[in-house]
Image (cartoon, rainbow, N blue to C red; front, side, top):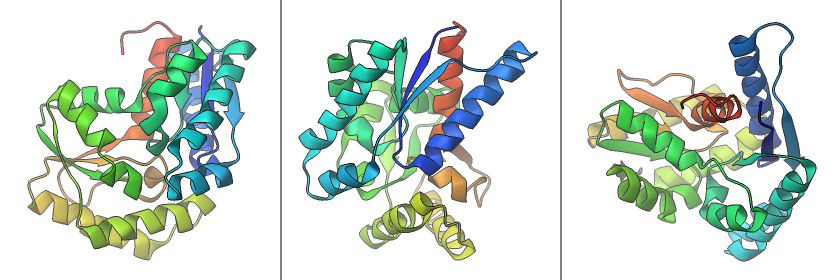
Length: 233
């Protein structure tokens, strides 16, 4: 079994889900008392959030680069960044760490492609929805067209993520608002919805319509276990 290196803490709420799900999957696969070989580097999210808001992505990247190098030195065979937004700097982290990085967008894009979809809606932080890195990678690598909500709705989703979900606050009113936004994307032509923030599955477990829901945290964790056990992802 390979050792999985997790760069977590962004937020720690979703990082807990990564650890739980990865271990559950390994236990289900191997039985007995088996659990995953995991090394976790949990960062302090505050300076990263500040760097995001001030568009200091190089500063945010350096924090993750240091984490990736530490995980390699500790014995990790490959890396996961346990958040969608910071995949904006994933290539820098992988290159500097010197070990493979399992990219959350590639895992998600492959799942959408297997489902036979061409156009999907995206919910996430405003950086994920607005900065273009998500759309470009999914378009260039998987031929997918990505729809995002209107600006006011993007602000709403971003606020729910940072002000509520990152603090473990699950509010039914916020769930209903996100469901309304999802239905709007479906009316705009979305064939499926990407939960492009690893906190969003804490709030949304099923789609409000008969439409495919792509839980990036779950897909990422499943691919990590497949890689650790040398299975075909």
